[in-house]
Length: 58
Image (cartoon, rainbow, N blue to C red; front, top):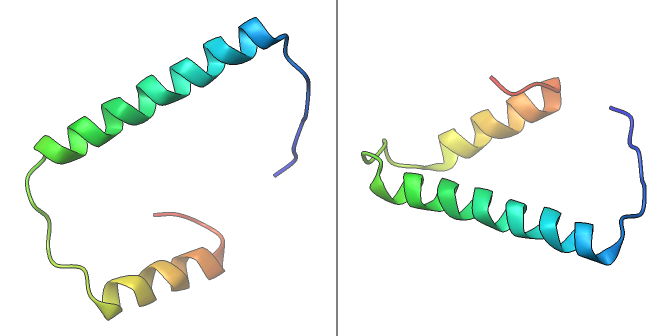
């Protein structure tokens, strides 16, 4: 994946930061009200590591 960097005026940076916080808050609230999932154990994290090594998220 390529990366692009650019500078924003402070006012626009604040707007983007606020949107990021709002998005994160929405995700946290949705997670808090979602149904419980199966227990997370060593096998779960081993599976995540294996998928990360393959370079893709499923």
